[in-house]
Image 1 (tube, helix red, strand yellow):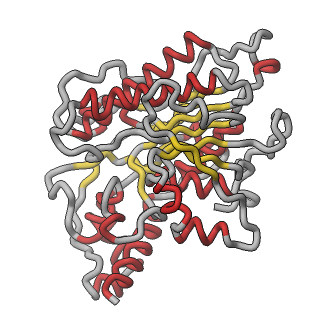
Image 2 (cartoon, helix red, strand yellow):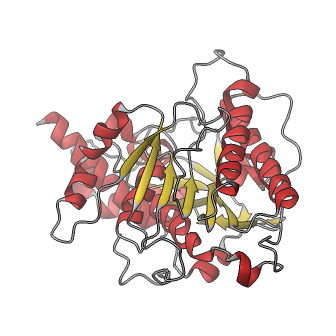
Length: 382
């Protein structure tokens, strides 16, 4: 993503104590995290330090084609640096990694299927790491006077009841950043429900911490719905079919992950828009002397952004047939997909207005993803 021509571009910061903003990014080896890294490197915040649990991941990231191409371009940004954080939940986990940092984007969190089924309880696998990891970030930022803003990746699941989001029941209620779930257990049907519970618990913990400590830096939580789109972190078609992209790819290849009976909530957002929202939110940083109460304290409030646009999964076969007719004839794609949608009113308009960008449509997400998928399949069969 190139920022000079993008709407809503944050101004280049001029009031920071350091010569250049330094962003600490967690979770860069994941779908959203890697896209956020690429976005940061072409934004007014190109100086990025990556927190990695495994030092071997550093070399793996640097050899990724998308990142290496960006770093070798004529207008090459700074190469990211790395900080080893073995455990995101250990006391003082980020005390070294956050030194001299001005902004933080915290994306790292346990995801569904990231733990073997039955290996740990939902509390151990999802809830405790999500809560403790976010609090460690906040506590490290609170002890670092250079920090201006902290942006934390949350989820739609922190704002919408589980049964509604998972399309077990329909609702006429309009959901958005003004609403927060309060309950998160203790019974969980599967990993996805445990993940949703972890994001609810994390949101509650973050807001309670901010209210209690009133930090001088701004705290923003970002709440995407289904996240789709090109995954530059993936190098094979099999990798591409994991995570949330499996729903679009399943419908576009005629194989629904859930079968024809299961509906999906009709709300989605592109991974590019999620990354852009994280980076644009850094520009909302608070200056304690200017916006606080005169003693370096902030408002004690967390700013939430819901990220979403409409998704109609029933439209996928028509888009596939119109945009990829050759690939349908070759058997790489199908117009027989039958994934159904469940209408959901999840309002992401405030993020567009406040951060200054336009959401990609589901069709745009689908076309980008399928172009990548087809390219990988043809490469693998060559």
